[in-house]
Amino acid sequence: MATRNGSLWRSVDWFTIVLCLVMMALGWLSICGASYDFAETSLFSFSSRAGKQLVWIGCALVVGIILLNIEKKYYEMSAYFLYGAFVLLLIVTIFIAPDTKGSHSWLVLGPVKIQPAEFAKFATALALSRLLGRYDFSFRKTSDLLRSLLIVGLPMLLIIAQAETGSALVYLAFFLVLYREGMTGSFLLIGLCAIVFFVVGISQSGKIFPHIPTDIGLFVVMALIPVVTAIMLLVYAHDRRRALIVIGASAAVTLIALLASRYFIPFNIGWVQIGLCAAIFVWLILSYLIERRSTYIFIALFAIGSVGYYYSTDYVFHHVLKEYQQQRIRVVLGMEEDIKHVGYNVHQSKIAIGSGGLSGKGFLNGTQTKLSYVPEQETDFIFCTIGEEQGFIGSVGVLLLLTILILRILALAERQGMGRFGRAYGYSVACILTLHVLINIGMVIGFLPVIGIPLPFFSYGGSSLWGFTILIAIFLRMEAERNVR
Image 1 (tube, rainbow, N blue to C red):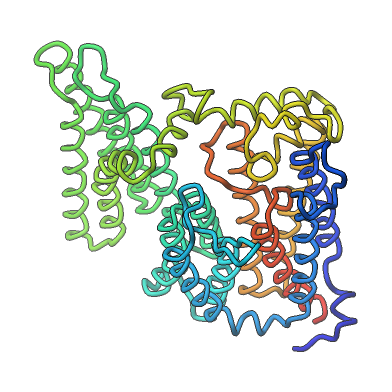
Image 2 (image 1 turned 180 degrees about the vertical axis):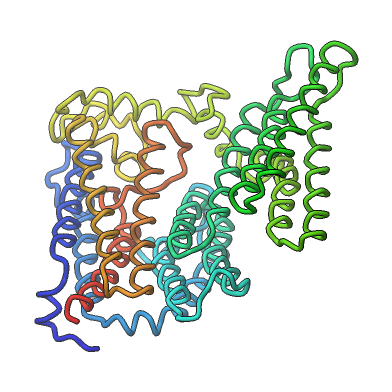
């Protein structure tokens, strides 16, 4: 249904638009604080990053206005085409993009550099929403489940091939959308287990129990696998008896192995635990053959697959991740301290944020900023400029604005009349924003490895700003049409 321009501008959610404009303005001021040199004559000079950011903001506004005037049906009709086009662009980028700090993710177009991964987010969101919006879509259909996973997974793999792991991680936000639209929570549980197994396995690897020749990382992960398997039996198979058997048998065998290794013949208990996981796998497969419940196969594959995953993490960590990525993970996990090299950015960022105190040092008065102690301060580490110049109050204010924006988008997505396509797209936008905020703030304050994720509307750069603008403008158009109806 077509809407006239007058109806559109009366129906569009101006609260969200004003919120985005305020954050763009505050982001520009933060970039000024992070990049301004007192030797410069003007904050508006195009030779400065502050001046360039004004150009990116102006272009973003033009793009936003254009997208707001395109009807929702055209976004829905062109969703797969746009997705395919950006997938091809991601493939091309791998081969033609120059090496930029170890990654091949930036295309150079004269004086302008763009990152296709930022724009592929909205295309992926549209394609996934189009699939989820089909009247006959169901996660119970294997074909539908695989299609949804393929739409999300393909761009991730291509971005990883560009050596841009940080941008690829943002695509995990789409799994939250799938969960909202009815996908079983088992996938989220498996994802959580993958993170825990990786962190425990890497951080505790090489550490041996006193008097027992067993790797602590191996022991803990192999002990967790039966526990999670029992939880899955209880929650997804509703089989309390088998869950208790798994827990009881695992605890008993592990305890006997510990005592035998400690007081009789020292041996690696990890092999006993691996044998337990194999036995659980065989038992659950036999249970499936007897009762014909496919849930048992899924849980059995999780148990044996987790063992394989544990051993693959060591290979990924040492042979897939680059040396600087390994060092960043080691620093975050407390495996080593390196405030002069890999941990330098985070260390200086913490100093900058802490020095801001309650109310900050004031605009352009940050000493850590002005002395350039924090590299990439106007991009990935822009939040430490906010913390230093505006203090705790300013930092909380920025987080509050971003939180309000995310909650507003979620509220609009849930409104009656949005339809499954609009709701799924709205959740995609909100989840992408949420992951960006959590990862960026987490790495700036040292909770997460530094992986190069911009803070929405605050970090310097045209690609990220335009990417977020496109995501939100398309959603606001969908929501405006709902209001007109």
